[in-house]
Image (cartoon, rainbow, N blue to C red; front, side):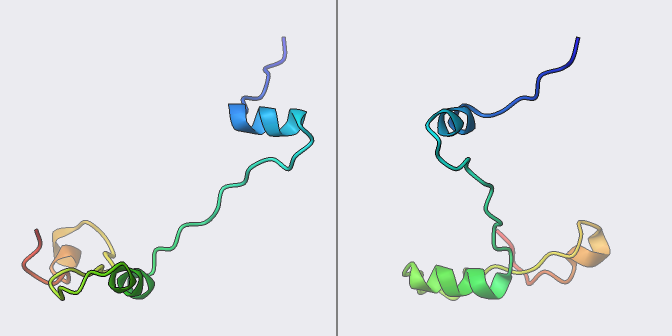
Length: 69
């Protein structure tokens, strides 16, 4: 017996209605872009910012500006 592929309900309904199926959109992960977005949302406090984390090793986490809350 062949396995049937799993699809989401919204994709199934879109297919039945002849509409294009939904696609996953890429998420932005650039700290510079996210910080600009944060300011555009109205966050004026410079204590809040996004930074890039290279890895979760202690040596790499030492590059994250402190204090971190």
